[in-house]
Image 1 (tube, rainbow, N blue to C red):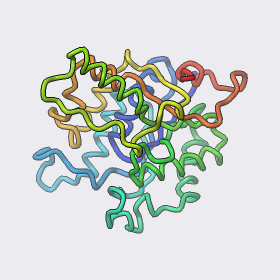
Image 2 (cartoon, rainbow, N blue to C red):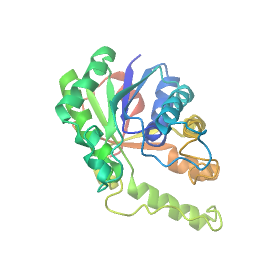
Image 3 (spheres, rainbow, N blue to C red):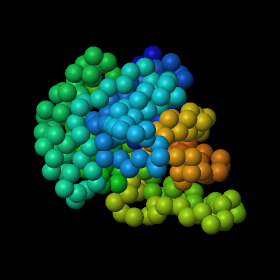
Length: 269
């Protein structure tokens, strides 16, 4: 069996972007490790969810372990940087924020974990951080360098397949399965995900959407029961969340590719 390390910017990112991949990997006997760059201090908590005086960073840290249990992950680590906030905010300039971290230094922190785990696959995000968040872009940069330092065979950059989502939403609307009055988020904007032509691999995680949903529910400070992702009807959730997409560059040859990669990641083209 192999090992997959999944590197993320904030708590709950692992649920949304890679939860199906990680749950499937764990179910097939692989070791799953999740690493967070920050503790998500600048997230907006669900109203009333925090106790008086409770720090959001502590709540979100605890939620990571509950999420990891739902996904079957064996280890959770934090690199120790602070949340940078959305692009263009003054918090981007905070000296200890992940956005201000030197890539080489942050990569060496991550490489310590990679050296210990010797993973077959490291998951990060695409070069735009999926939707332009500075911490997500930094995950791409730091993860790429850390993989070089540790000799990780495969780096899989998680992304959103814009074309897949647009087709899926159109199909649901045409079939009448779209809930009345439900407004899906815009999927066809150029800085959101990647066009299908640029995506190399897909992980089929339809059989693991309940584990993914449980992982998302574990992040209750960010996703209340009425969150749009958690209120999706089952068919919509399975369609939208049951496939996870990645850019792998370079793609290893079949002879050199780890078994974990070959088992989980299906070429898209």
